[in-house]
Image (cartoon, rainbow, N blue to C red; front, side, top):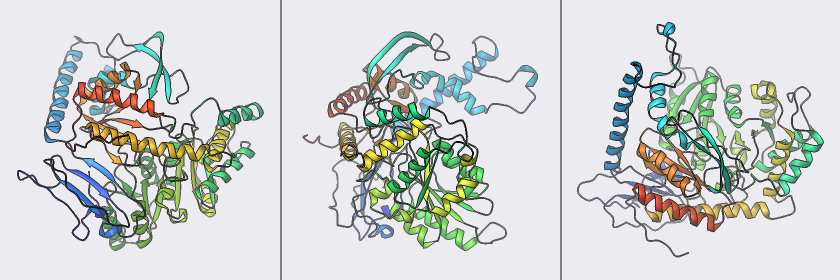
Amino acid sequence: MTESSANKPGNGQVCHRVKNGVKPGRNGFIKNHHHYHHQQPMYCYPEDKVQHTACNGSSGLGLYSRPFIESFEETPMLVAVLTYMGYGILTIFGYLRDFLRDWKIERCHIAREREEQRDFVPLYQDFENFYTRNLYMRIRDSWNRPICSVPGAKVDLVERVSPDYNWTFDYTGKVVEGVINMGSYNYLGFAENTGYCADASAEVTMKYGVGVASTRQEMGNLDRHEEMEELVAKFLGVESAMAFGMGFATNSMNIPALAGKGCLILSDELNHASLVLGARLSGSTIRVFKHNNMQSLEKMLRDAIVHGQPRTHRPWKKILILVEGIYSMEGSIVRLPEVIALKKRYRAYLYLDEAHSIGALGPGGRGVVDYFGLDPRDVDVMMGTFTKSFGAAGGYIGGRKELMEYLRSHSHSAVYAASMSPPVVEQIIASMKCIMGEDGTTLGRDRVQQLAENTLYFRRRLTEMGFIIYGNNDSPVVPMMLYMPAKIGAFGREMLKRNIGVVVVGFPATPIIESRARFCISAAHTKDMLDTALSVISEVGDLLQVKYSRHKRLPSLD
């Protein structure tokens, strides 16, 4: 992971412990980043490693009004070596199996070019195809598991078996009931089939039907769509907002409308694929800065102002910064106060993707802007999705009224896409009113608070157990590092045997040696559910030996 300017020592307030000549930032290094407007106590741990704690780095001085604590423990050297060896062995066996397939000794199920097309340009990417048939297929059973219930705190799974090592699956007809769901983005628990939101959606379905069969610009603009967009704008604290039927397309189809040739896009290296695709489709020049690294971002902004466009050195038409609120694979939170300060200093525009943070962060559930207590007007383009905290589908963009009017006529997603389904719209309206307290109850506020408490508890317990956990203390996305390829499938299978459903992630969604399990905490999780899941995670962690952390902590009393 990278180190931003905010992680630099301020006023000499840094504690280093080095033994056996180990340099800071190497094997077993833990980075805990603290920002606060008051002094934080400095301390050292007795373990054989380096502890780096910084308060109010020079570029972040006075910008943070609350603690900002993130931890990224580096991969232990032995684990890294064994992980590379594991992938090396799998690669060797992969080439051996490809040899057997070429000689028809082993059957190959994957799509291949026909014999008469061998002289054509390859249709399939060579390495990705090799990885899919020789590595991914070994653990394919860890993904795409069919669910036959509401994806709430507990789910029912359709049991399946594979007669040919995960190339195909057969369904046994049995159902695995009561699996604790630790993988869905159901942050506030609104993915449910009973209650206020479900009843409202059912009532609207009876009145409007399910589909609209038209675009918003033609015959598909309902009064519920207008009400939803007004409510979203009010919720975000912006002048206007507009909604789209697909969260991925909200990014990929709107960024090209905001930037084009002669524009510069500065993108965080860990941005979601939808942001990356949107930036590429725009035709703009793209430069990638290190993750959450304000020094890297500022250097690129400064160079862009000084040097301008390549060859001609003309000023850029516009500079657009793309960041996310919560990074879904790292569990980290954007350093928004510093990003806004840099954006203002260099007169750039800011595009903030709050897909995972809206509803899940902030005292009012209004996302990362609310979390830091910032002014929404400082963010030029506020994007988010309804698929996670609101238990619905689609996405939104909020900002100035002039921006929304421009997108209504220039965004491909607005002009050509069909309107959002009425029951989905009603689910958004009902859940958002619930969060805002406009339903006459405190249910929404209680769920936001419960999510925060569950997140802190779950993260703390995993850290005490000795797992390497990435991200911010307040992030409900909790990545737990597995590293080795064999442990990706093994962890998912062993957890499911014990009735816990988890998501395991590997290449290409993560760097090839940084495979992990990703837990998503929900307000719907009770303490008993979390304790059950934690007990099983600890048991499986001991079985697979994935408690890699050197940062030992004494368990606290609950």
